Amino acid sequence: PTQPYYATILITKGQAYKSMADYETAASYFELAIEASARIYGESHPSYFTAIDYLGLMYLEAGDVITAERYIGFVLSQRADILGDGHPEYYKSLNNMGLVYRDLGDYDRALPLFTEAADHYRTVYGDSHPHLVEISTNIGISLYELGYLDEAGEAFQKALEMAKSLYGERNMMYINNLNSLGLVYRLTGRIEEGIAMLEEADRLYQAIYPIGRISYPATLNNLAYSHLMNGDAKTAIGY
Image (cartoon, rainbow, N blue to C red; front, side):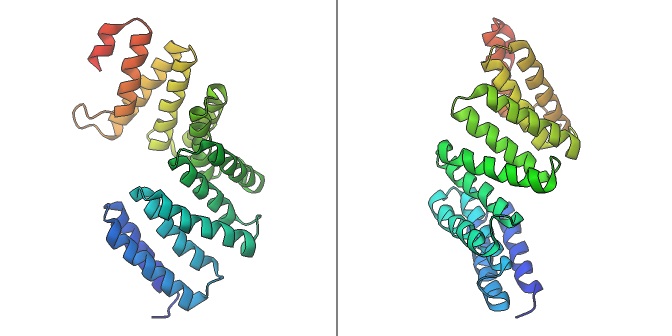
């Protein structure tokens, strides 16, 4: 088929299988989408790069970071050459390449990519673009892993405020950043504030997933350790 919507249908099917963790089937649909995009649009069209990007991100989610790096790196270089560094798809590729380095544990290389992507988005869209929530979170994670806790806290705070403004408090982007900020506060000596944030993250998580005590595991662990650091071993044991 040569209809423009055909590649989009294939990508949608690939995304559906990826959401079910059936990565082998998802890859087959993304590969078909790449072939269809090349046939319909040509290999210098943004839709062609988008199809390749989906395949790379699927491999990243599946844990095959080396294969993901090959696809995502190719798309980044092609978008830079053909679309230019002022195009929104280029900003997206910067973030995706940062995710690759993050998953490789190379935070020194991930951080500048996330930072550049965030700067571009802010320049073009201001501080309210949805992608900025994810990118600010990624900046915070990178700074945290590099040991820059104060700067990480600032990034998580920005992401938290944007997530609340865009999605409200009953959203995993908000909860994840609340948990991360609570962890930073705990590690920088603001233990009581950190505990309050972690407890709020736990409460919000249970409001979304209220089945018994299936609570947010990372938050529970952080809460337990925070109470232990605060000298309250009995409460820590309860988590």
